[in-house]
Structures are given as structure tokens and as C-alpha cells.
Length: 122
Image (tube, rainbow, N blue to C red; front, side, top):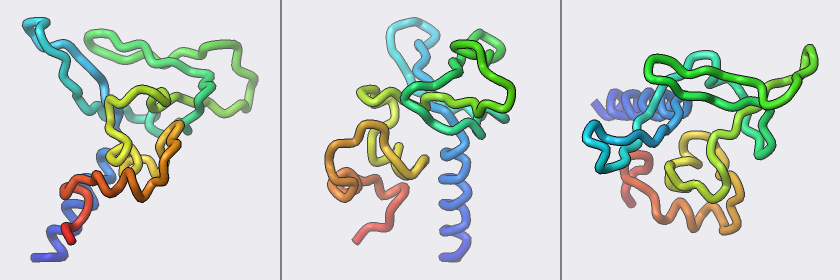
């Protein structure tokens, strides 16, 4: 049973590492919620603070566009999250992607504010 629990937790984290957090307005327009979206093919783009792509969300699809002319063979980059944007809190961002853009404090201090969803309690 313990191995099953670990396998489910690992599968959940793998799914999160392939997803994107998107802020959306509630149906009544009064609150902003965070939804996680799975975006096949877009999830293979590497992070950059100076990306050459941008995602444009529409009601039924998301369009990936180049921000500038891209040379043949040039790698495409996407900005997972801006340095001062905390849609995904830093400790959760780290567990999903293995880094935190613009992190200035030691990662161990970030992880001290961890969620038991990702870490076993001491």
C-alpha cells in the first residue's frame, strides 16, 4: 500500500510538471481562479526569461506564436512564469520544474514552507 501511495504521488507530480497554471475569471467574473492545463507539445519547450514564443489563450484553444522571426533550427523557448509572478508559489514551482525563476533566497528556506502534498512530514 505504501508503494502505491508513492506511485500515485509520483504520477501526480509528473502530471503537474507537464502542466501550466493559468489564471481565469470565475463564471460570474468576481474572482480569479488558477486552473492547471495540459498542453501537449508546448510542455516540451524550455524556460527562458527572454522567450521567443508567447501563448495566446482563446476560449477553445491556445495558440503558440513566435515573438520574433525564428531561424531554422533555433530552439523555441517559453517563459513558464515571470520572476515576480507567484501564480505558482515558489516551493510548488520548484517541485514541478526543479528551479524557481529569479529566486534570491536559498532553496532550502523555500522548501521549509513546503506542502505535505509533495513532501513527507517529519
